Picture (cartoon, rainbow, N blue to C red):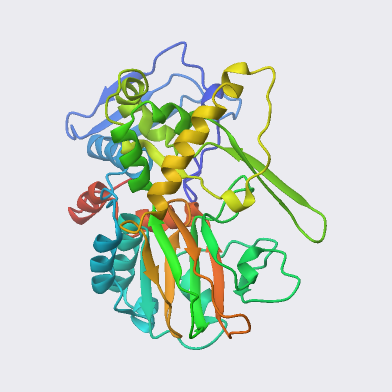
Length: 389
């Protein structure tokens, strides 16, 4: 291991484990253990015996921290919400100020916690500057650059290549699902707003999945296993295409919940929502269904998919589940594009409705959650003063 960077110099496959190392315990310091390998492990080619010295508290804490911080972080459980619950949430977290978000660590933690728990927060008093949305996004992570650019404008325009750039109603969807890695977070900063229409609509897809599987547990097989294709062809020529099930599972959590997941698919038990990594729903950009031919078991599931999709569509469009937000100039909404579906009501043609948008990858969001101790187990270890070597 490089002592400066902490990065490994060798792969585990390069280490000969045929002869176990000799364990040495220093009686004067029983918190320390040394492994004498009896041979060179550093690739130097000489006969120097490599020794590894570890502190037992560090070894214990490393295992605990690694498991909790990286594999199965004990983050707060997401709050599954309907319209009324989210309105209450926004009254609490919808008062956070732009300057506090940029400069106050406590406000940043509140915003991160709200984003993880509910998937949406609103920031107030944002300057009427096009660069403001960049500053907001970069407080969390690096902007995701797409063919729309680092930032983009949501305005009605002639010859629009996307229905979002018209004044029409926009049905519930998630952005850029035709990409292998869609954006994780989306920021929308209101610079101008229409007097008539143009409200942004949100619904919690996690709640929809929970409702569907609680009423019909057999739907879990379709939700997690039937591939749906998405496509977008840009005016410049590139064609984006990818296939995804409605529900993507978190593989790092399946080890703990694989029995529950298996029984939910075969014995009608409760679906393990803690295993849900992301949801994919974007009918406006759905590609034609593929006939697989060599996978008849998938082809046979199309009628079932149509039934489950109808249930999902009804859930995310139910008035009791839809939160309507008419952004005012100076407000910026940040939401989880892998959890919340969003849409828009029609607005008056020619109205000066102008939102400035930006994307972030989910990796950057997760990294910030870890760094700020939203993982409660890691936060507790760190606050107790234990070292993580």
